[in-house]
Image (cartoon, rainbow, N blue to C red; front, side, top):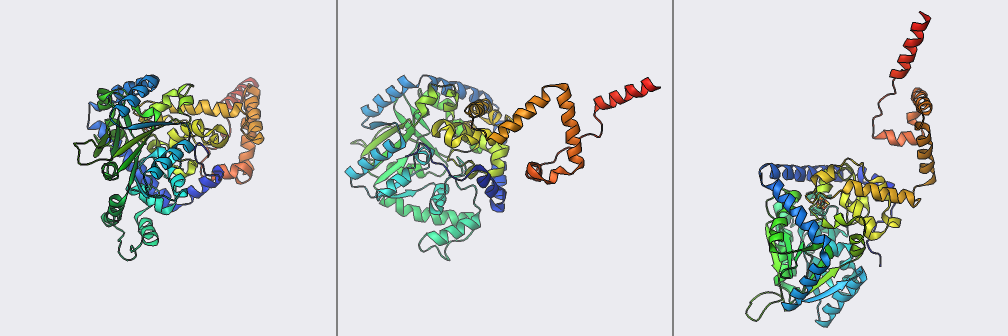
Length: 473
Ligand code: SF4
């Protein structure tokens, strides 16, 4: 099984599909603009926010740097509180472990709250292939599950769909939805809520991700704005939490510093609407909660990232702010990246987890190096520098097509001398006169870009002309 699922279509096909989809273009513009504005206003209205962000960054980076003793402490605490821990090296290990637990307990129906880690390891596909019925309970994830699609945004998985499309999807895929469901947002939400309630009540196993893992007490913290994680963690008799190694934080003080940041930077709220904390299975005194709790700690390449030059990227809290400001993401959306992780963060972690062979085109083509992502990132992750690093690696590994390499080599040679630079300006002027913008490579490039005209005479040419005129005079 691959380390990270990928869309096998080449980048130009994914790009063109996104650029020619008017619904996608409209919804993307609306969603990214709304989330960006909310983030900016949230910080403006919260003067202490900038300082809190700085504290959060330091605590999170420190936790990532020293994660091994913290992870060992978390494992010991989880076990001491009656939970069971499994370290999974690969997506296959995750699937095999969860299937074994489910089979041992006669599980048939599984409910899930939103989790990018489960998308990364294709958990639904692994479980469904063995015959388990899996139901996503986050509204956006529910929609894309019905549509058999991948998330198009870390926070808003169905950001590429409008309400008319969602109404049509419900009518096509959900029994008794025909003529019942309206296309207004409260009506759609109410319909999904009623349907999901039946799944909550009949499930034997719940699966969550984890936004944070507190080493001090072994507590998994899940934040949502819909409250579905509360039901996923309390109603079924077996609970699984799939948590990436990088989710570790030191203690409750550190958690308090960090926990605001996903909401502030992601959706412009001071705190997410629901914070669910799991510290163990149901005890003899409790009247709710699972009989068994399993924490699956996911590596899947994270240890290698930790030991290499891109360690800072592990401080990511998946707030999505970098996606919303990225000019490439704003044009092509998440599916354009061909990975479940999109935007600038996806451009870095997809090749690191899934390999340069599969995802090397992301750092090569899907970044303008505008630095907007680093400015928006609450963890101040140097995404642009990391993308440039990965781009250099792609070039060093000779992954650029020969034609592109030749073009850049000739361009480099031409502009490395004054004479070559001047000649290239003259050539560009001739090409412009001959209207070469309508043929070859330039035609595609200039379809969506404006090229400023080459001056009829550059300053240096004008200067030389003037000197000649004076000499003659
Ligand atoms: S890289 Fe930064 S901005 Fe992007 S999702 Fe992660 S924490 Fe948020």
